[in-house]
Image (cartoon, rainbow, N blue to C red; front, side, top):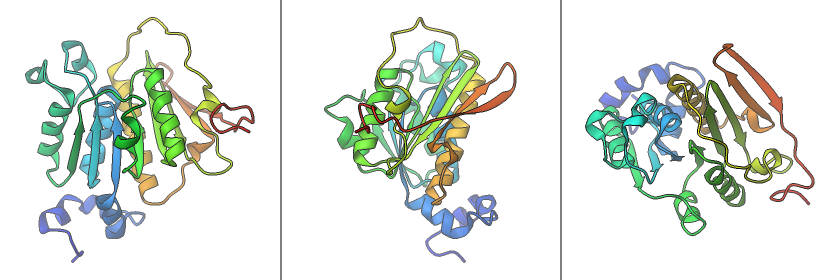
Length: 247
Protein backbone atom coordinates (compact mmCIF):
# COMPACT_ATOMS: atom_id res chain seq x y z
CA UNK A 1 0.00 0.00 0.00
CA UNK A 2 1.41 3.46 -0.86
CA UNK A 3 2.72 5.37 2.12
CA UNK A 4 0.96 8.58 3.17
CA UNK A 5 -2.14 8.00 1.05
CA UNK A 6 -5.47 7.06 2.60
CA UNK A 7 -7.68 4.29 1.28
CA UNK A 8 -9.92 6.94 -0.25
CA UNK A 9 -6.99 8.62 -2.00
CA UNK A 10 -5.71 5.28 -3.29
CA UNK A 11 -9.07 4.74 -4.94
CA UNK A 12 -9.40 8.37 -6.08
CA UNK A 13 -6.02 8.49 -7.84
CA UNK A 14 -5.92 4.91 -9.12
CA UNK A 15 -6.26 5.92 -12.80
CA UNK A 16 -3.37 8.34 -12.36
CA UNK A 17 -1.09 5.78 -10.78
CA UNK A 18 -1.82 3.14 -13.42
CA UNK A 19 0.16 5.32 -15.79
CA UNK A 20 3.79 4.11 -15.75
CA UNK A 21 4.96 7.71 -16.15
CA UNK A 22 3.16 8.65 -12.93
CA UNK A 23 2.83 5.76 -10.45
CA UNK A 24 2.69 6.50 -6.73
CA UNK A 25 5.99 8.34 -6.87
CA UNK A 26 4.53 10.80 -9.37
CA UNK A 27 1.32 11.09 -7.39
CA UNK A 28 3.39 11.96 -4.33
CA UNK A 29 5.20 14.64 -6.34
CA UNK A 30 1.85 16.17 -7.29
CA UNK A 31 0.70 16.03 -3.68
CA UNK A 32 3.82 17.92 -2.57
CA UNK A 33 3.60 20.52 -5.35
CA UNK A 34 2.60 24.18 -4.93
CA UNK A 35 1.04 25.77 -7.99
CA UNK A 36 -0.31 29.30 -8.47
CA UNK A 37 -3.06 30.02 -11.00
CA UNK A 38 -3.52 33.66 -12.00
CA UNK A 39 -7.16 34.07 -12.99
CA UNK A 40 -10.27 32.05 -12.12
CA UNK A 41 -12.05 32.84 -15.38
CA UNK A 42 -12.52 30.81 -18.56
CA UNK A 43 -9.00 29.36 -18.91
CA UNK A 44 -8.42 29.17 -15.15
CA UNK A 45 -11.68 27.31 -14.59
CA UNK A 46 -10.53 24.37 -16.68
CA UNK A 47 -6.93 24.34 -15.46
CA UNK A 48 -7.97 24.62 -11.80
CA UNK A 49 -10.49 21.80 -12.16
CA UNK A 50 -7.90 19.39 -13.53
CA UNK A 51 -5.09 20.38 -11.19
CA UNK A 52 -7.38 19.77 -8.22
CA UNK A 53 -8.75 16.54 -9.69
CA UNK A 54 -5.21 15.23 -10.26
CA UNK A 55 -4.32 15.81 -6.61
CA UNK A 56 -1.97 18.80 -6.66
CA UNK A 57 -1.32 19.46 -2.99
CA UNK A 58 -1.48 23.26 -2.78
CA UNK A 59 -3.10 25.58 -5.30
CA UNK A 60 -3.06 29.35 -4.96
CA UNK A 61 -5.99 31.02 -6.73
CA UNK A 62 -5.41 34.67 -7.63
CA UNK A 63 -8.34 36.75 -8.87
CA UNK A 64 -9.75 40.10 -7.79
CA UNK A 65 -13.11 39.99 -9.54
CA UNK A 66 -16.69 38.98 -8.73
CA UNK A 67 -18.86 36.60 -10.76
CA UNK A 68 -21.02 38.24 -13.44
CA UNK A 69 -23.72 36.77 -15.66
CA UNK A 70 -21.56 37.21 -18.78
CA UNK A 71 -18.90 34.97 -17.20
CA UNK A 72 -21.10 31.88 -17.08
CA UNK A 73 -20.77 31.15 -20.80
CA UNK A 74 -17.17 29.98 -20.27
CA UNK A 75 -16.16 30.19 -16.58
CA UNK A 76 -17.37 26.77 -15.49
CA UNK A 77 -16.14 27.04 -11.90
CA UNK A 78 -19.10 29.34 -11.24
CA UNK A 79 -22.89 29.09 -11.61
CA UNK A 80 -25.98 31.29 -11.23
CA UNK A 81 -25.92 30.90 -7.45
CA UNK A 82 -22.47 32.55 -7.41
CA UNK A 83 -23.47 35.81 -9.08
CA UNK A 84 -21.88 38.79 -7.29
CA UNK A 85 -19.73 36.47 -5.15
CA UNK A 86 -15.97 36.82 -5.22
CA UNK A 87 -14.52 34.46 -7.79
CA UNK A 88 -11.94 33.04 -5.40
CA UNK A 89 -14.72 32.10 -2.94
CA UNK A 90 -16.79 30.45 -5.64
CA UNK A 91 -13.72 28.60 -6.91
CA UNK A 92 -12.88 27.42 -3.39
CA UNK A 93 -16.36 25.97 -2.92
CA UNK A 94 -16.38 24.18 -6.28
CA UNK A 95 -12.88 22.73 -6.00
CA UNK A 96 -13.27 21.68 -2.37
CA UNK A 97 -16.40 19.75 -3.35
CA UNK A 98 -14.37 18.06 -6.09
CA UNK A 99 -11.29 17.22 -4.00
CA UNK A 100 -11.12 18.14 -0.32
CA UNK A 101 -7.51 16.93 -0.13
CA UNK A 102 -6.23 20.02 -1.99
CA UNK A 103 -5.09 22.99 0.09
CA UNK A 104 -6.45 26.11 -1.55
CA UNK A 105 -4.91 29.52 -0.87
CA UNK A 106 -7.13 32.40 -1.93
CA UNK A 107 -5.83 35.79 -3.05
CA UNK A 108 -8.79 38.08 -3.72
CA UNK A 109 -6.68 40.77 -5.32
CA UNK A 110 -5.28 42.06 -8.55
CA UNK A 111 -1.57 41.52 -8.97
CA UNK A 112 0.64 44.59 -9.04
CA UNK A 113 4.30 45.42 -8.59
CA UNK A 114 3.86 45.69 -4.83
CA UNK A 115 2.29 42.29 -4.11
CA UNK A 116 3.22 39.94 -6.92
CA UNK A 117 6.53 38.66 -5.59
CA UNK A 118 5.16 37.77 -2.15
CA UNK A 119 2.22 35.91 -3.71
CA UNK A 120 4.14 33.93 -6.34
CA UNK A 121 7.56 33.24 -4.83
CA UNK A 122 6.53 30.28 -2.64
CA UNK A 123 5.26 28.23 -5.60
CA UNK A 124 6.95 25.61 -7.76
CA UNK A 125 5.07 26.54 -10.92
CA UNK A 126 2.82 29.38 -12.11
CA UNK A 127 -0.07 29.22 -14.58
CA UNK A 128 -1.12 32.51 -16.14
CA UNK A 129 -4.80 32.39 -17.10
CA UNK A 130 -5.32 36.16 -16.96
CA UNK A 131 -7.22 38.15 -19.58
CA UNK A 132 -5.00 41.17 -20.28
CA UNK A 133 -1.47 41.85 -21.51
CA UNK A 134 -0.49 44.08 -18.59
CA UNK A 135 -0.99 41.22 -16.12
CA UNK A 136 0.65 38.68 -18.41
CA UNK A 137 3.79 40.78 -18.72
CA UNK A 138 3.87 41.50 -14.99
CA UNK A 139 3.57 37.78 -14.18
CA UNK A 140 6.14 36.81 -16.80
CA UNK A 141 8.66 39.37 -15.54
CA UNK A 142 8.26 38.25 -11.93
CA UNK A 143 8.53 34.55 -12.80
CA UNK A 144 11.69 35.14 -14.81
CA UNK A 145 13.34 37.07 -11.99
CA UNK A 146 12.22 34.54 -9.35
CA UNK A 147 13.25 31.62 -11.61
CA UNK A 148 9.74 30.18 -11.59
CA UNK A 149 8.54 28.13 -14.58
CA UNK A 150 5.49 29.72 -16.18
CA UNK A 151 2.76 28.27 -18.41
CA UNK A 152 0.84 31.05 -20.11
CA UNK A 153 -2.42 30.61 -22.04
CA UNK A 154 -4.59 33.13 -23.86
CA UNK A 155 -7.78 33.06 -25.94
CA UNK A 156 -9.66 35.35 -28.31
CA UNK A 157 -12.53 34.49 -30.60
CA UNK A 158 -11.91 30.97 -31.91
CA UNK A 159 -8.15 31.16 -31.29
CA UNK A 160 -5.97 29.99 -28.41
CA UNK A 161 -2.27 30.34 -27.59
CA UNK A 162 -0.04 28.43 -25.19
CA UNK A 163 3.62 28.79 -24.27
CA UNK A 164 6.01 27.72 -21.53
CA UNK A 165 8.67 29.98 -20.07
CA UNK A 166 11.49 28.14 -18.33
CA UNK A 167 13.95 30.65 -16.80
CA UNK A 168 17.04 28.58 -17.60
CA UNK A 169 20.13 29.75 -19.51
CA UNK A 170 19.57 29.86 -23.26
CA UNK A 171 15.77 29.83 -23.06
CA UNK A 172 13.68 32.75 -24.35
CA UNK A 173 11.56 34.72 -21.90
CA UNK A 174 8.05 36.05 -22.52
CA UNK A 175 9.35 39.45 -23.65
CA UNK A 176 11.45 37.80 -26.35
CA UNK A 177 8.07 37.18 -27.98
CA UNK A 178 6.25 40.31 -26.79
CA UNK A 179 8.74 43.03 -25.75
CA UNK A 180 6.07 45.46 -24.56
CA UNK A 181 2.34 45.72 -24.04
CA UNK A 182 0.52 46.14 -27.39
CA UNK A 183 -2.10 48.84 -27.94
CA UNK A 184 -5.44 48.08 -26.33
CA UNK A 185 -7.66 46.21 -28.78
CA UNK A 186 -11.47 46.34 -28.87
CA UNK A 187 -13.15 43.69 -26.74
CA UNK A 188 -13.92 40.57 -28.76
CA UNK A 189 -16.10 37.54 -28.27
CA UNK A 190 -14.78 34.22 -26.98
CA UNK A 191 -16.06 30.73 -27.73
CA UNK A 192 -16.26 29.27 -24.24
CA UNK A 193 -15.10 25.82 -25.31
CA UNK A 194 -11.84 27.31 -26.67
CA UNK A 195 -11.04 28.69 -23.21
CA UNK A 196 -11.70 25.20 -21.86
CA UNK A 197 -9.36 23.61 -24.41
CA UNK A 198 -6.53 25.97 -23.52
CA UNK A 199 -7.09 25.51 -19.78
CA UNK A 200 -6.97 21.74 -20.19
CA UNK A 201 -3.77 21.96 -22.23
CA UNK A 202 -2.30 24.27 -19.59
CA UNK A 203 -3.12 21.79 -16.81
CA UNK A 204 -1.73 18.84 -18.77
CA UNK A 205 1.53 20.71 -19.38
CA UNK A 206 1.75 21.64 -15.70
CA UNK A 207 1.18 18.09 -14.47
CA UNK A 208 3.82 16.79 -16.88
CA UNK A 209 6.36 19.38 -15.74
CA UNK A 210 5.68 18.63 -12.07
CA UNK A 211 6.77 15.06 -12.82
CA UNK A 212 10.15 16.48 -13.85
CA UNK A 213 9.59 16.24 -17.59
CA UNK A 214 10.73 19.02 -19.92
CA UNK A 215 8.27 20.86 -22.10
CA UNK A 216 8.67 21.21 -25.86
CA UNK A 217 6.98 24.61 -25.60
CA UNK A 218 9.93 26.40 -23.96
CA UNK A 219 11.05 27.37 -27.49
CA UNK A 220 7.72 27.20 -29.25
CA UNK A 221 4.28 28.82 -29.25
CA UNK A 222 1.33 26.46 -29.67
CA UNK A 223 -1.55 28.05 -31.60
CA UNK A 224 -5.04 26.51 -31.73
CA UNK A 225 -7.62 27.39 -34.37
CA UNK A 226 -11.02 26.00 -33.38
CA UNK A 227 -12.72 26.93 -36.67
CA UNK A 228 -10.28 24.73 -38.61
CA UNK A 229 -9.65 22.27 -35.78
CA UNK A 230 -5.94 22.84 -36.29
CA UNK A 231 -2.88 23.15 -34.08
CA UNK A 232 0.37 24.69 -35.27
CA UNK A 233 3.70 25.44 -33.64
CA UNK A 234 5.63 28.68 -34.05
CA UNK A 235 9.32 28.73 -33.18
CA UNK A 236 10.41 31.15 -30.43
CA UNK A 237 13.98 32.40 -30.19
CA UNK A 238 15.94 34.16 -27.47
CA UNK A 239 16.48 37.78 -28.51
CA UNK A 240 19.82 39.44 -27.73
CA UNK A 241 18.05 42.83 -27.48
CA UNK A 242 15.26 41.56 -25.20
CA UNK A 243 14.52 44.17 -22.48
CA UNK A 244 14.28 41.44 -19.82
CA UNK A 245 16.76 38.67 -20.58
CA UNK A 246 18.93 40.18 -23.34
CA UNK A 247 22.46 41.48 -23.09
